[in-house]
Image 1 (cartoon, rainbow over the protein chains, first blue to last red):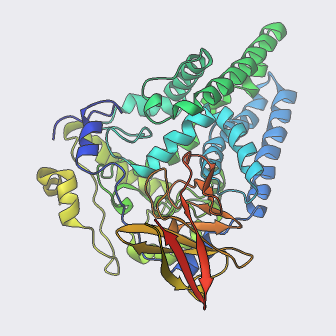
Image 2: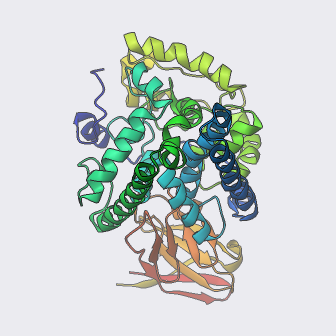
Image 3: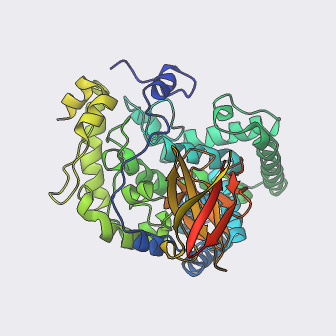
Length: 363
Length: 104
């Protein structure tokens, strides 16, 4: 296969449409309607509890950090604050973009907008971006949210553990949008009618950052930026650590989430920060199931999925060598065994989707 | 020319739920509202052509199972992004325990 072109305007994008990979019908495990309806039911209680813990934790850690500033004793509190700001905001942004976190729509929207600001993703643009990610998950040239491209650029992945490229791009995009323009790639998935909303949000954000910077200059201290802005860098590591596991090293250009997504068992703290998105195959297969019901969904359908990785460490032990191999041979991917109780992968279908050579390489 | 088509029995659909109904090469969604009324819309989401029958009915909203876009199934009005285009709706009547839809 020729080198992948991840541009949404390039030849792979065109090929995905021509071959029927774009907007295709994906594999789903059978779940009885009655049980699926029960899983999809919304509830405010779990997300209210988690949001109070999340924002309350931020207020507490920031207050202690400010009180101890500029002593190094404040560092652990800033690190804790940073993870809640720069990583937990990723999962809150994500779940609220689906509208499934809360039952009450305004609560979803409220948390969605706060989390979007923290994670530096325009809430209008990224709602559309994420819709595309679910339509065309890891379809090259179609999915705007491919975190690990092939061949992987390790320097980029490592820099993003400190939010450096993502945040830089986010601030650049914010300024572009505030000037009244959309990036040409954004324009492929954001309807024209939504553009004024993109611009309005970007201008509000610019005003908030300008006020924070002005306060920092007036105080002669970076303290205001430790509260707003910088935690997107020093607290990003957790969301990158968990996010890379979602699809890294697995197949692209397939239409079965069991082939391109990874479920990983995680410790309770990471699951709180990540809002159960470690059940990632389940989330992609049934995106309407709220985060708090994903463990139940997992128990119901695991007979049809590859065995989950037992920990974050085991996920990296599986993924990292595969990424290194993709440096030399970018068509390589991990094809994980299904249990005997699962419906098999559609080899014929994916052979067609991947091309004969790629499917053979995976076997 | 429009005609009334026998789509299903009234008790084929639980209250606050929907089913898929295919007819004449087209697909529709038939809803049973919480007040016991029946409604019919196009069966595919206007955003990405996903079958709405796998979605969730909440009150008078149907939520698409793929991207969580929402429509008011009584009017077809698009209520939540990423859906922007309204659904087409069709007249429905109930006769003798059967749900009939008028499709053009």
